Length: 607
Image (cartoon, rainbow, N blue to C red; front, side, top):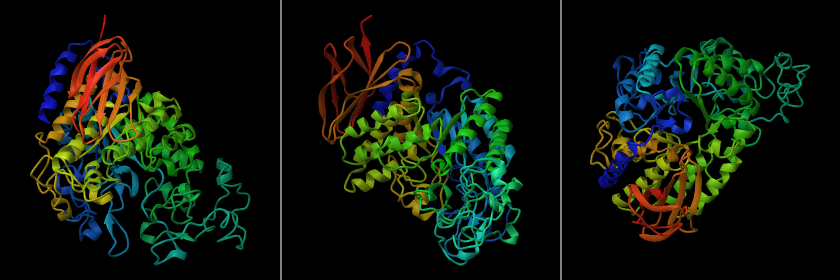
C-alpha cells in the first residue's frame, strides 16, 4: 500500500514542473467547485477545543444539557475551536474545502422519555442566527473561516430550510408517537379539520399562488390538525417570524412520498411552508446574512428534495448575488437529494425543475457500493455516467456534483464492505476501500471525504452508529469496532498520518490537484462489463487534450486486457496504483491489474 503512495509521489515530481493551471491558482476564490477536494465533518464529533462549552451553558442532567460523551445520541464536546486547531491535519490529507455540519443553535434534547437524543448533529434549529453554544460562538466561526481562508481552504456551511426543531404540537396527536399525514384533498385549507368542517381562510386561493396577498388570507392553521406551541417555547425561535404557526404546513408526519414529501413533518420536526413569500424572504435574509458576515464559500442544503421546488428558483439566485457582491465568484450550492439506486434522472430533475446548481451524487455512491462493496458488473458506471447528459448543463453540471462513498446518514463504505463480504480478510476489505477511494478521487465530480474514513473507521451501521468521534471516544459501541489499517480503536484520538488510508487519500488528492484532467477534464468510457472486472475511463486535459486513463478491477482475480486509447499515444506512465503497460499498437494499451487493483496512467503522445 505504501508503495502506491511512493509511485504517486514520484510521478508528481514530474507534474510539478508543468505550467501552472487555473485549478492551482494562489487565489482560492478563483477555483471552480470541481477543483476542490471536500472534507466533511460534524463539529461535535471532531475535536474538543474548549471543555467549558461542553454543556452549552446549561446545567443539569444530560436530558437538559444534551451532553453525555458516553451516549452515541448526545453531545460529546467537539467544537469550532477544536476544528480550527486541526486545520493542519485536514489540509495534510489534501482537502481544499471544508464542509462543516450544521452549527446553528439547536433544541438541546428532543423525544419522549426513554427515546430522547440531543441536537449534536445540528438539524434541530431554533436560532438560525447564532452558533449553538455547545459548539462555540459566532466569533469562533469567524475565526474558523478566517483561518481556513488564510490556508487557501474554502468553507461550506450545511444549512436547513425544510424544517426547524420540533416545537409545534397538534392537539389531536397528544401523547401519540405518530401523527399521520393529512392531505390537501381530505383536509383542504378552506375547512376546519376536514371537508365537513366549518369554513375558514376565506379567499385563500391555494398554496400554488405564491403571492403575499394570497397568503395573507391564510390566517387559521387548523385545517388538518389543531397546532399549538407550549407556553415555554412560544418565542424560542429566531428570527421572531419563525414563531408564527401559520408559516408551517401543520399536516402531520411525512411518508416521504407524493404530496407529503414537501409538506409533511420529518419525525415531528416543524415543516416550513416554503411556498409562502414571507418564508422565502425570511430565509434569503437569514442565509444571505451568513454570507455577508462571514464570507463563506458555499452551502450544502439538507433535505433539498423535500422543499417546494419554486422556493429554490428564488433562493439560489439571491444567494449567488449576495456571494458575488461579497467578492465570491464561485459560490458552490449543492442540495441533498437522497436516493439509493443508480438512477441519475432522479437527481438531475432537481437541477432542472428546482434549478439547483448541483446535488450530492447519491447515484455515484450507489454505483460504487454495488460494484466494489457488491457483485454488480462495472456496467453500473455506464448507467451512471450516461445520465450526465440529463443534468441542467450536462457534463458541466455533473463535474460539479460532490461525490462520496459514505456519510453520516447512510453509513461508511467500509461497513458496507464488511456486511457484503463477512468472510473477507482485513486485507481484502482494505483493498476494496482503497479501490473505492481511487474511484472517488479520480472520476468526475467533487470528491468528498467523510471524517474518519481516512483513519479506517468501520461503523456498526448508519445514522448515530456512523458518527464516531475523531478525538478519544467514550462510547462503548464505537470503541469495540475493529478498524482498518491500525490496531487502535476509537478510544484513542485519530489525528495521525500513519494509516495507509490516510496516505493513499493524501497522495491521490495531491495527484488530482496537479492534473486538470482529473478536476475539469471530460470523460470517455473505454471498457466495462456485465460482471465484476474491468472498468476503464479516459479523462482529458481541458486545455492540452492530454489523456489520462483510469483503470479499475472490481474482481478478486487479476486481469490483463487491451484497452482502447487515443491513437496518438506512444506510451504510458503509472501515476498511481499499478498496471499501466505498453502501447501494443496505435490505439490499444495493455493493462494488467491485480485483484481489486487500479491504475492511473498518463499517456504520452507524439509531438
